[in-house]
Amino acid sequence: MPQARLLPLAKRLLALQWRDRGRSTFVLRRRGIEFGHVVAKRLPLPSLRAATERWRRADAVYLPGILGAGPQQQQAAIKTCRQMFDRLRHGGNFLDELFARIGTDPHLRYVGSTQDPSDRREIEQVFLNADCHGKTVAQDLWAKLTWHTNEASDRSLRIRFSSGREHLDEWQLQTEATARWVDEFALRAFPECRAILECAPLHAMLQQLLQRPYRISERILYNNAPGGGAVFHHDAEPGQLGVCFSQLQGHTAWFAIRKRKLARLLVKSGHCPTERQAMRSLDNGNDERLWQLVNRTPQFGN
Image (cartoon, rainbow, N blue to C red):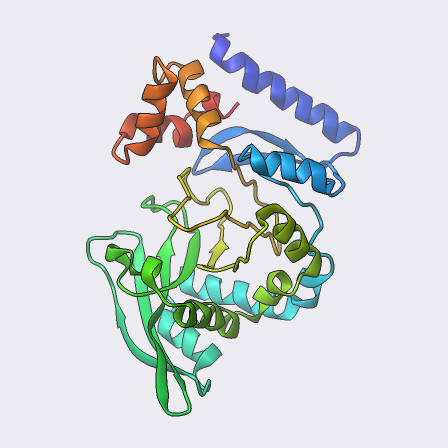
């Protein structure tokens, strides 16, 4: 048996052994590629010191159960949201779905919809203005519905909220009032966001890690289809302090790794001869060989 197959097989056998011991195991499969197995493990919340150490190393900080009863309290909203995504996945109209949620809102006014023909993933982008006391206080708020990938086999969807002309990154120049109305748009359309926004332990932890004022903004709602999900990507923007992932229902494997560590793995895998070249490769959005390596190569995932 080729050496490349030994490690995945060994891990598969190990996962079966964990299952025999009563532990829940899940196959990690994306778009027909099996990357290994996940073994469910109950972990306590990290101490503030441990969380801070990981944060300062730019490592992911896992906060199991920090949302408490929040997701359970939002079960009705989560259920209707999942039903909405199922309708959209089968050809439902995004504008109709949004209007069913915020059509009677006195502060949010529809101004138009677009679809970018150059983006194969985009389905529809809906624009609104925010009005208060007869005056427009925020313009070009938008919600955009897209597929996760260009692959027809993956029916995963997402909705992103922001403002301004996206191709010019105008969201980076938005005023505080506009940014808050973007967040309010997302909350009024999808009230299950309260499970995160009203979670006192989460906000206390973020405040300790960041040590500065912050806002959970530029919200994205993910609805992953079985065997699908987002591709590996770099998720950092100017002014962004970090990314907060929250799983409200179901099981999803989220990989979060700091750039420098990923570069070292690229060197180890033989993709690049040096760490410096690996960093350049990660900055190059047109490196097809890198894309194939991290998204389509099971041996790299193992």
